[in-house]
Image 1 (spheres, helix red, strand yellow):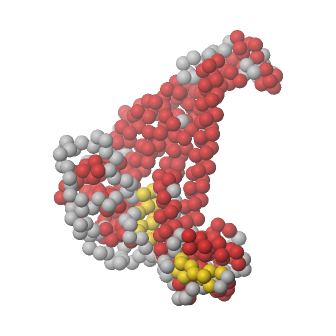
Image 2: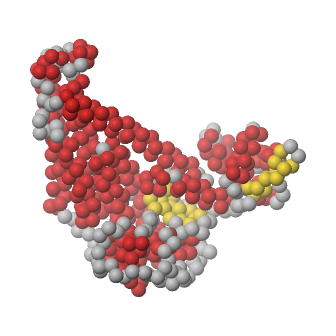
Image 3: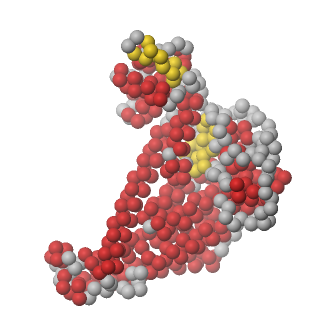
Length: 308
Length: 156
């Protein structure tokens, strides 16, 4: 148990450090699946590890020992960890469960809020144009989902650019991208170490939709330009003189997701990276395996104490 | 893309299915219908008159207080104006149903959870540094003057 139980607690750190790096390299669809899967597996494995550590303490409590028919004294004598660690694990596990429930409730409420507003949209057709001068566009999940574009955004784009926008948002709806982001954010709520993974999933679904738009329109540069233009008008930057072109050329360090999306579209289409994929899958197997191993050890301890 | 079939129609007729037993749905739809009633009246209406017209349009039986609630909410949102008319208030529309939907959308988007979690925005926020990076990446392709937008689209 000694190593196995701590490994699932350490692996999220590794995943968090490499998430953004991996999201920038993997093909977006693969990245979305892999990063979402990683977030869920690592959240579950680290939760299980905390539960196992907590069980070594709780198992020593006489009432629980009586209910479970094992010896509290044997559990105490063979305690594989320190009391302080087990107590911390108890607290962390409670906090993680509470945070996960709260996040799930908030997400459900956000979905129902969106659904109730979506009912006010005109029926029929996937596209709803809002009579709103502020440039904006988004996909609203639902059955069926809607693409909402403001009049301001339509005005700012030309015909080809509007095709890009629609292809992008259609990819979001068709790929149920909101489910990926919702699951990843749930995992990150339970284990805050996984937050970089959740934002990497958010980035990957945007890239996924961008690449779809690039395939539909057959023009990567057009998609890149549309995103940049839409971002500039949506943020009221249009017309500002490019104040400082002094920044080191080609540097994306410290920039947000939009320049990274644009840069990815200006580069060659993404390729699969089998080695990177294999490495990440290995980490997931390791997390699952060690959580299972620790659970087996705990079961062994309970059996030693005369339990089931 | 020329015809925006989805554009919210002003003269949207009340739906027969408003009688469906779904309170949330009715709340959203009713305020839209109420706003249409106010718009078409062209004069200030009391809650009683609005209720009568809603029922005449097939909105089903409505409590007076429900209508008062809807109207005062529209007033609080700045979508309807009100003035004293005897013991009650009389309401006039200041924005059409299309603006009501836009207003509601904007409020939904303002709730912090929604923007990131539920609605997939085409483009998010942009820092000054991001803008610089974009201009560097795309250079002359990007609009740089105030005439940033393309030609006004066919949908306008």
